[in-house]
Length: 160
Figure 1 (cartoon, rainbow, N blue to C red):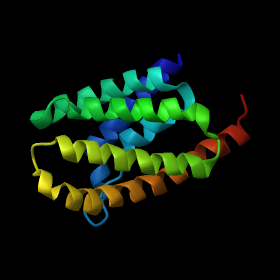
Figure 2: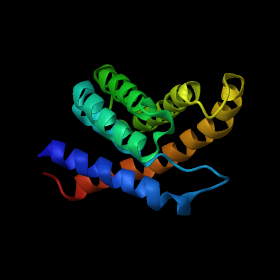
Figure 3: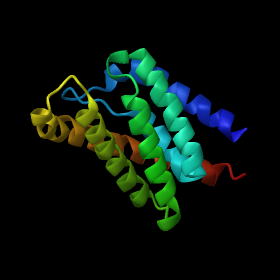
């Protein structure tokens, strides 16, 4: 049942990322909702589930935009593995740690993506990484703060 819920969350994040996210654009920066949900899944379930979910949603992204086919699947799988593997070595319930992991995951994802994409040259990677990657990481981490606080509040109000 949790796998179905995770798949639904990732598909919802994908739909929102491809349609509605333009309304949240600030200075040509958009948050990455898919990575936000993937980091949440990796922290809750571990590396194996996160790798599979990351590959699945990355492949869907690659099919939706096939210019660099396989690059999103690779980067999302790596992020799922790193965050899922590292969750046992940190205090994953701490909101500051979650936000720091989310920030690092977006930075690392964007670095992998910019190094692998054919749309920009290797010489331009540092500029794109600092200009767009850093801004997206900050924006996604801020959005993740509200997401994490909302989940914590929900657990306090409606305990299972």
